Length: 482
Image 1: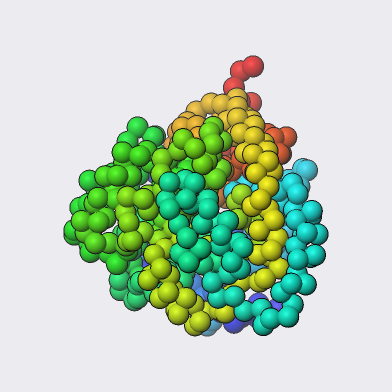
Image 2: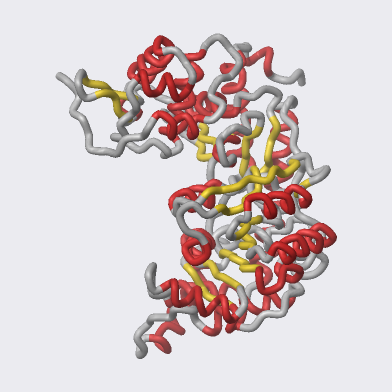
């Protein structure tokens, strides 16, 4: 019985070539490399079920490969259940779960999700919900639409900025449905199709997807992940002059995925560069409160907005510090800019849920719970670092002072292949290519430390086995000598 052709969009050869990035791994197994790269895009959700693939000739031209290699790769994908084909209808993405065993089939002990850098709800959430329920009655008599957010919550957010060295009033704060929602609102207001947006390389993948969805063009400036140099401020200056981006998107506090933090001197120089170019900057502060080796309010460098002035738009979130299930974030900007954002918001939504705002208001009053979360994550970070050193001694990283992940350098450029192999061993991990504007970064992989230490230990053991399979090395030889 022939496979039915599902409804879905079509991806062009050139677009697929961009998504795949540097898919060749330097071996003679070109078809295996290409199949693995396409599998990874399916597993990452970048190629949804039903997506029609380009014809063999079109894909061969786009990738600069032979039709024989393309055909062999498609044969492997069909064998593994990732692609289905029908004469006259071409090929399309299929559901890998339909085959007997695939990369997502869990190994012994169940699959481990090592892709999300986020923690369960913070201690005290249930208590905050009870307190918020009691306060909800005060709001049931009005219409419930709060386009800027509840005043009590905005007061607490403004106070945090002021305590960090950036004087802020509640009139400069708008509550949003998460930091990503905040970024999309700013993106819609500042940029349109064809406009350029300066970003770090590597950077947060969902920000890149939002930029592309707006038909804008991300312009990358490379970071030094080793921590020796960090932000290339001269490179930012050159990109601002040469590309004239509409705005910049930067994460200067425990940057995702590198974990780097820009010091006060660097912020002053970066702010001067942005001011000289008159370029607005969106500063993602999602991880700023996860300072694992200090007090987030006293001692760290002031916010970048303290140096960039009214050109700076800060976005924050409770997702990483308290719980992603709250889906609440905020924007901090000048009153004039925030007024424009409020007007632009009506085209997207009419405000954030009142009850969740009441819950977050209660949580922000509990400093001890957040301090305990930082202490817990400090232990998790050290546990993951120790596990990587012990089981994967060839991997290197700079231990971050905060945030939620290690950015590991691999001995070989096999990140995408490793991610595919890891899935077959019961651990899902985000390869370096996810964090690059045009893919690449095949020597890097992100490992979050938001899971319990025993789970991370098991995940690293599985990664060791997966790496051995990619290298073609018996695991007994790949393991360090005790």
